[in-house]
Image 1 (cartoon, rainbow, N blue to C red):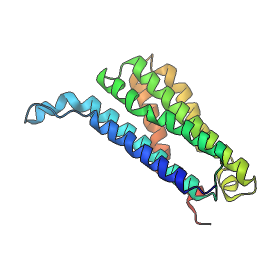
Image 2 (image 1 turned 60 degrees about the vertical axis):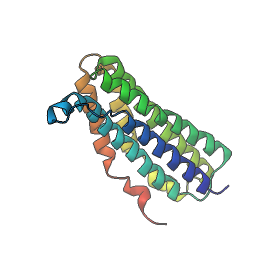
Image 3 (image 1 turned 90 degrees about the vertical axis):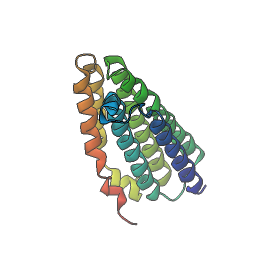
Length: 189
């Protein structure tokens, strides 16, 4: 089946995810700069999550650009990814409202880890239907950034219970790794 419907649906869901996150940023009651100060945890969490969702949107676009068609299994695999991404606003809000306490920061990492694994699964499902000789398979070969990211999440989650700022720093490092889109699959056919 053509991929256009999958792309449109995914773009819509990701747009809603970002909209929900920004709605968590409540307008302060004061009119001076001091009234913005209590919002810094919310803004910081929003910024990190916005970057993450933007990275997924960007890489999802490039991933689907590298393929010709999708299957029913791909639709389910994509929904699996969107499920984990749809939890980003919840864990972002919980984390920021509780000033980056250990459990919310760890759960934030769990959602990031499961989103990453879902993206890997989607990629592998696309490779299965397009073949190991496809442009996508050749482009993704090895996927060092993906493996490093998953390893960093696995380390960061338990570290959230030691120092939540260490875990947040590690999450930011992963976002920095992916901030520039993966050029391997960005190239035109």
